[in-house]
Image (cartoon, rainbow, N blue to C red; front, side):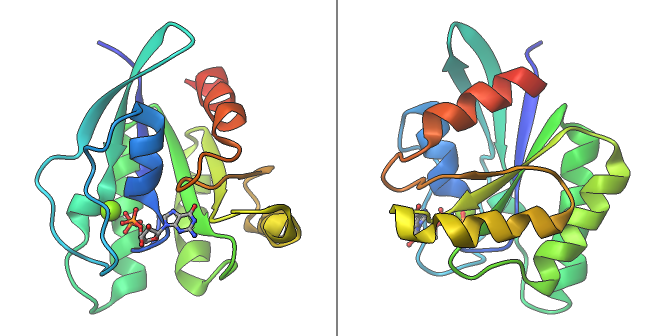
Length: 162
Ligand code: GDP
Ligand code: MG
């Protein structure tokens, strides 16, 4: 069996877009409207000759009630299931209360975590990305899942912790 990377975070931060970027195919469904239920969440990925599984947790988004607790609970399940976790944050929004709740859960899990500062489409957003050091999970990786910016460095970092 191959190692598993779970991709977690709030709705609409770009988890499914990032999963597609990682697997190099458009299989995870990208939605402009957050919270749509998905059934398929596991995908095969290959980088530098190594295979791993990517879990898109979008399928676990249920509804908007008690959302922070719910997203944190999903992250907890994901961390238990996976060998490593990618926490995706919208760098243009910054860390929200929900993001901080998830970060805390992941910190407690003891699993390796990468903070992904997504939607860094150009260098002007890099400074916002660096504010995500405040999540307490180490170096944020600035990427544009949509355009591919930073995804090579991110994948190298993923392989280093898997
Ligand atoms: P998810 O709910 O976290 O899975 O988010 P999605 O992958 O469905 O993306 C939500 C929205 O954000 C879609 O409109 C995406 O096109 C957009 N998006 C995702 N990644 C990026 C990015 O790197 N830059 C920009 N500008 N938009 C993005
Ligand atoms: Mg999604």
